[in-house]
Length: 249
Length: 288
Ligand SMILES: Nc1ncnc2c1ncn2[C@@H]1O[C@H](COP(=O)(O)OP(=O)(O)OP(=O)(O)O)[C@@H](O)[C@H]1O
Ligand SMILES: [Mg+2]
Image (cartoon, rainbow over the protein chains, first blue to last red):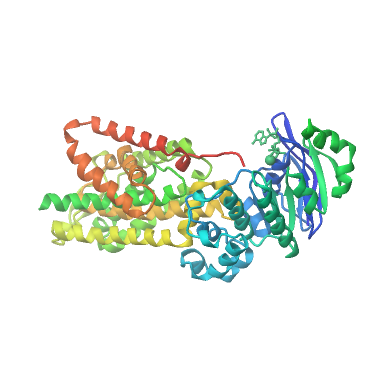
C-alpha cells in the first residue's frame, strides 16, 4: 500500500527524517512510534506532501507520488489527522465535513455546478453517516472551535474519512484523551480497519499502540531502529533503551 | 436631494469595491490590488461607450471581463506570497496600473472632438448618462441594481459549498490542502470574481463622475476597498455594506475638517484591525 525508500527530510542541520525504509501492507494497522522529536510527524508531512523530501521515494499503491501536490495525494486516497488539531474553527461541524468531500467518487458523482454552488442536499446522507460514526450528530450546527477537545479529535477523524481514504495517517490521535476516550478511539480504529482502510498510527500511548497494531516501526533521531510485531518490539533491546527506557527515566 | 443621490451613488460604487475585496479576503488574502481592477474596468467601459459608441450595459459586461482577466493574471503570482508580502505585492500592482493610465493616451476624434484617455489629463467627457438624459435618481437606481446583484451573488456563494471552501482556505491553508482542496483554483477563482466585481464598479464610477484620471485609482482607494470587509467583518456581505455607509456616510463627510489627516486615520485603522485579528488574515499557525 505504502512504501518509503531511503526517505530523508532535513531542516538545515537537523536530520528530522534520515533514510527511512518502510513498507505498510494493505489492510494493516501500522504503528509508528519513537521518542519526542524522532521524526514521526515529519514523516507524515512528507507522505502527505506538506513537506517535500530532501531525498528518497514514496510509493503509494505502487506509484511514485513524490511529485503530486497535497490535495491530489488526498484524492488518490491518503488522508490524515494532525497532532495539534487543525479544524476549520469558524465553520460548523457540518461544514467541516462538507468542504472535505473531495474523494474521486464525490467529485464524479455531482456535476461542477451542483458540487460547488448547489445547496446542502446532495451530500446529506454521506455527512450524516460520518456524524453518526463519530458521535457528533447532535453537534452538527456547532462551530468547530466551540467543541470540547475530545469532540474536536473525533471531528478531525471524521473529516479525514470524508475523503474516503484508502490510507489513513493518524498523528497522535489519543494525545490528551482519557482512558474511556482512548477505548472508544480504539474501537473506531478497529472498525475502520475492518472496512478495508489501511492505517498508520503515530502514537505515544502504548496501551493503544500495542493493542491494535499489526506491525510497528520505531524511529529514533530520524532513523528506523526496529520493526516488528508488537511483541517483538516490546522485547527489542534497542527499543527499550531508546524509547521505553527513556520514558521510564 | 441630489446630495443624497450622489452619496448613494458613491456608497454603491464603494460597496462594489468592498465586495470585490471581501471575497478575496475570505481566502485569507489581504489584497490592495482591487483599485487596479477598478481602474481597468473604469477605462474599459468609458472607452467603449465614448469611443466605440456602445450602450453602457454591454460595456459594463466588458468591464467585468477585463477586471476578471487582469485579476486572474494577478491571482497566480499572488499565490506565492502571503501576509505582508502579499499586501506589498498587490500594492505595487495597483500603483503599476495607476502609472500605466498616467501615461496612457488613446484619443480618437468623435464628431470632430478629440475624446479618450489623455495621460495625466485623464479621460474626460464620459457622458453616457447626460447624453441619454438620465437624472441623478435614475443613475443611482441603475447603479444599485448592480450593487444588489453583486451582494446577492456573494450571498449565494456564502451559502454554497464554495463559500465554506473559501473560508476553510482563509482559516488554515495547510488543513485545507490536506482535505483535498486545490488552493490554486480556490484562491485564483476568488481573485477573479473579485476582479469582475471591481471592474463593474469601475465602469459605473467612470460614468457617474464623467471624468476619470490616474489619481482616482490611488492607494487610498485600494485601502478603502480592503478596509470595508475588514471593518465590516466576514460574517456576511452586509458587514461590508455597513462599513461603507459608516466610512463614506459618516467618517468622510464628518471628518472633512481634518483635511489630509483623514487619510492617516484610515491607515491607522487598518493597521489596528489587522493587529486585532492576526490569525484570521495574516498567516496564523505555521507548523503542521
Ligand atoms: N518545520 C520545521 N523546521 C525546523 N525543524 C523542524 C520542523 N519540523 C520539525 N522539525 C524538527 O525535526 C525533528 C523531528 O520533529 P517531528 O515533529 O517530526 O518529531 P515527532 O517524532 O513527531 O515528535 P513528537 O513526538 O514530539 O510529536 C525535531 O527535532 C524538530 O524540532
Ligand atoms: Mg509529532
